[in-house]
Length: 438
Image (cartoon, rainbow, N blue to C red; front, side, top):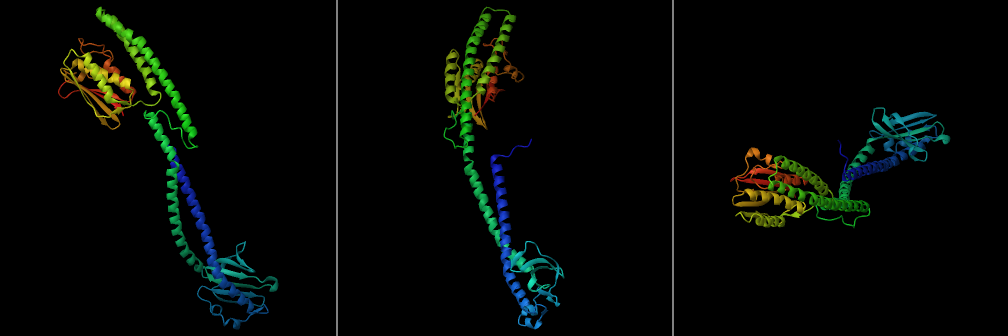
């Protein structure tokens, strides 16, 4: 599918087209003016010769050649020049003779009864003609003076060559000016894009109120949309929290009670199935809340320290060292409560199976932050790593919990566009890699 042109490209193309049109019109107009000026200089000489020939007519009937001896250019015309006189009394001509000639109307460069023509000579060269038809003063009389066209073309080419150089420089200046105008003129739009990205990334709550008049309505509509989405986000989060409080706690209590009373496997399976469905719908509700409004930004180090403190209390009966190796500052585009839940589940799972050590580290890679939780326990066989992420599955029957921790971490990570990958650690144990967007 062909993508529409950007505003920058549209304005640039339109500006270049207008510049080209103006330059072309200017060159045409200048060429016409220059041609007229050059032709006028030659016409002065040709018109003078016409008047001399007119005065050399005896009573307007016959040409007196002796009257032309004093005028060398008429008595012996230069190469490419010529004249032709026709009267009721005869026909006289010297030099180049006209061939196919036209006399455009309206007349070209008229001067009294004298006007111009153009065409070719009898030997095929381009010529310019000045002609006079005395009319009533001398019926049937026609006087022509012929000059070579190249006298005009040569001078016109020389002058136009300089004009083209100047016009090229003018065009370059106009293109640079247009580019500068586009850069300055579209700067508010580029800034608006950056401001929208800041809102989306959670770096700003709304777009700045002060905007150019042309884009102020757009900014106001975006701010109204942000406010509405924020209200929807709060409502969705509140509903999700109420639902979690109303359902998850009783279910957890029921599962503990069934285990304590050594209930049948069928009863446990039924409750597990209900818990899975509840977890699924809670994740859907949380997904709707996450996708509303701007993206959150959370510093990892404070959340990790709080999780570590909590896990040290929970597993205080075991000699497990929980260490962190985090760069500061280190932020991800994840809600702080969701980040705490993901890290808490991973660290709790690692502490259960570790022999003596759990390590939390982080590393930026492209547009993601890779949070790694590694333990030195016995690990999980490679063929069971994928199975460990299945909701409700415990790889060891003797372990605590109900097998939802890792699957919840995976689902939450996917809601933010991230992922959870389980690997075998180099020295044994399990390595959980949590990839989250920056």
